[in-house]
Length: 348
Image 1: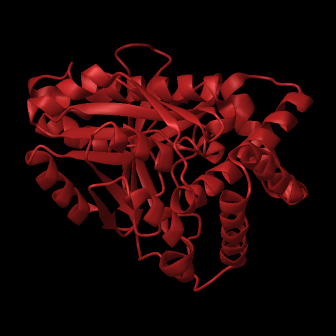
Image 2: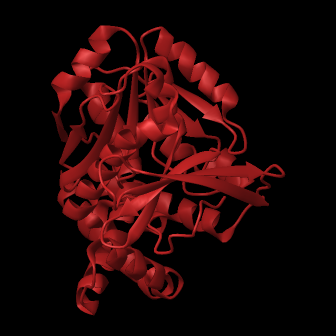
């Protein structure tokens, strides 16, 4: 069971940007099913994409991912198309049906490319090119020695390509991660199905701070210790776990929610915070990582503990997310996160 309460304030930058703080309380620990049909499906895909990565040339991988996505497209239309369409139009405004259909297929294909990329990193000598914009700002924050918080946006390729690109550029990053990190939220998924994705990512991480979805205070203490030692900690912008969120307008008529913890931690401790987005510019061959300036640089004194004063930070992060979504809508991982109802709050 989930209860929410909220307090709202108006942004000092624009009257239309009204932000609302939402608090989520859990009455009991989340229970996981032992195994599901999704586990079996994901294991089958891992086998298929392991064969694809080792036996087929890289130029054919995107086509394979698209063909597999089309095999089950009718089922996904029945289960998720209406919500996808509503979120898409809340962001961009009214779109033609054929535009939405084409984007839906491209988006489903990207999700399969994401799966294939995991197996390719584990089994095949893939050597993509990475470019990092905003690297000078990130280097200044690292050199300051106060620790650095990276706040990664949820693109289809952030979880693996983003980590690898920063690792190959010389950054040592620790990842904040839910215990159910991966495609399957079951006991079997935690133990078996999700292991491939975690193993692929761990190659490019200095460490992983794992926490249960119902409680993150212990993880935050671990993260703070690393940051005080000058480390770099990566949070992912997700509403899957945590308790406190900020809801704000998104696009034409949509709403998006972002977790409070990364911004509040950075502001309270005077730690630089950079928003990071990763997009694919050539299938399996080239990725661009965009790093923002330090979003907390404008905060001073008591404002670091004043939630309302944090509004510019959240709005800047929102704007970077919106820019990524507008430029690469098929690479946005979670269209379900864009709400069309302003009264809708986060759910577990």
